[in-house]
Image 1 (spheres, rainbow, N blue to C red):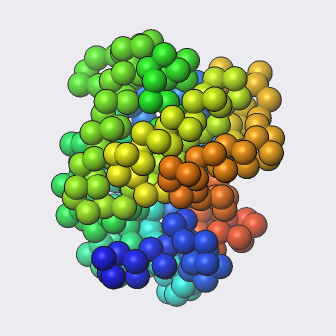
Image 2 (image 1 turned 90 degrees about the horizontal axis):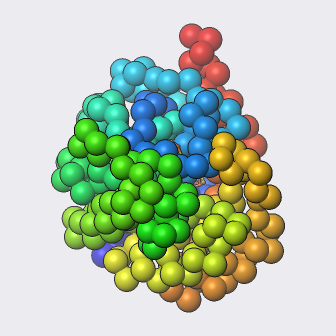
Amino acid sequence: MKEAMDFIKQHPCLHRAAARRFGRIHLAVAPACNIKCRYCTREYDCPNESRPSVTSRLLTPREALHWITGMVKKNPYIRVVGIAGPGDPLANAATLETLRLVHKRFPQLVKCISTNGLVLPEYVTQLKAVGVKTVTVTVNAVDPLIGAQIYDYVQWRGLTYRGIEAAELLWAQQATGIVEARNAGLYVKVNTVFIPGVNSQHIPAVARTVARLGAFKMNIMPLVPLADFAHLAPPTRKEIALARAVCKQYIPQMDWCRQCRADAVGLLNEEDNGKNACCIARR
Ligand code: SF4
Ligand code: SF4
């Protein structure tokens, strides 16, 4: 328990005070995705975790190791290495390969991934083996009727699912993944995208359900209107604050997320979180 608390206190996305002192580095090694969220356009980073305004330069696992080696030397306050896209980390073989290389070179760094959760149950053991301690799962709905409005399709074991069937499948996998990750001793955070008029009234039910399954923290993120949801107005700060106030009775809330790029590096409050990524492009 003490070890768990020590690591959380150095994680800028799990502990508010840590965000001022410790940094994270995202490795953009995962372009593919196995679902289609209606607010996503594949030209950008996965909006389930990242700011969808810029496209990250993709890295191979070896390039990622090279980059992180330089960045950790330059920024010794980096404590966390995450893979958050630009697609879904678990839909890309490069994710585990990268984590394996990084864990071998930097066993002291906390490894994180952010996923839509579709294949999480299959990967919990392997993630733990490569040093992953924290998993973020984006859960936008626990009711398939609402999920069907959010997901265009889900691709699973060679088949494409749509509508309620797709939403049921995704939620079943997410729920199993959260429980199995928890049982394996991983720290589970849930991201939920606040989509006005679609899941906004449903978010407390998401909070209640994921807390019951064992998630430790929730991050309610405002919709960035893109793709099929480009016509929607983003939620106001007041709406987000109200949702957090309601949900915190079920699960602690993260309210300092910066919706970083999939190649972000440094402290969360550094304005140009992707700046250092340009060094790679010029290399
Ligand atoms: Fe896009 Fe991320 Fe959803 Fe995949 S999981 S469709 S990359 S928002
Ligand atoms: Fe942390 Fe939010 Fe940035 Fe992810 S997107 S690294 S949760 S601040």
